[in-house]
Length: 289
Image (cartoon, rainbow, N blue to C red; front, side, top):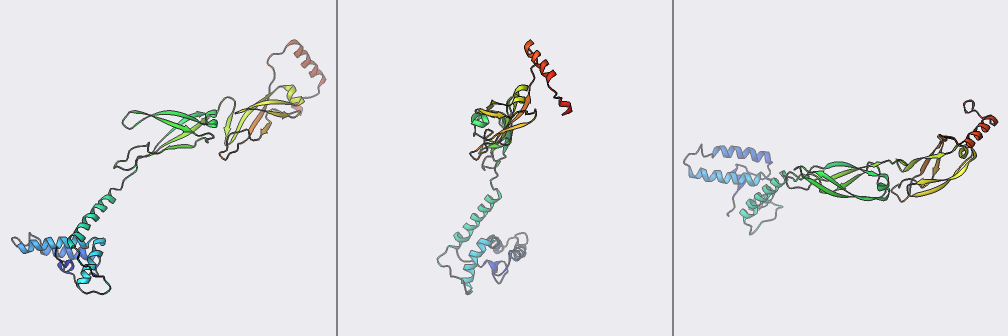
């Protein structure tokens, strides 16, 4: 395709113009050579095609820069490399299509699908040791889908597990959203979880509390022997280090045992006699303490 002076077609004398100036010049030229104004004028029809072509090239910064190299070389403008052997049609009109396609692609930027959030309950032991669970969720189309979820050992309460790409589909061909599963750790009848510490009750008989002793206390992964000082009171707490929940750093929290002094609900005859003698002998009155 032969060289065309696009600036001249738009009535411009220089390439040093802004896109707004090009648009303004195009409106004036298009109005002047519009077919409705030049009915039956074949030259005007050809001219308006060239004007539209010039506008497509010069209104896009990327193609304008490339055309400017050709225009400046043709007009002997200094500091520009001459462009030789270039097919202007392929060089510019083809690029216009590429630019348009790129712009269209950019205007349709792929949107990631929405994330989905759900939650599941796990026992304290399952969270401590780790477990693989299966959960079933209803999808957008109403079907049930089963997921296999690996719960890592020592997972924290309310921590979320992410299943990549298992959320809602993208509306325009992008990536699927993700599925986030919130873990709710359930306390059991023996232990309650507080951060990395486990809390439990330590039940003692009145004489164990009064005399002091050593007792075995159950832990989440076994048992531990603890010393009970003489005269310990209900509500006092004993800390057993490193026998709590996993802290995520290779260590463990503490096991906190709260003392509860238990009185037998029924006494044998000889037990009752002993308590009667203790009552007569002892001057202890907790209400006066």
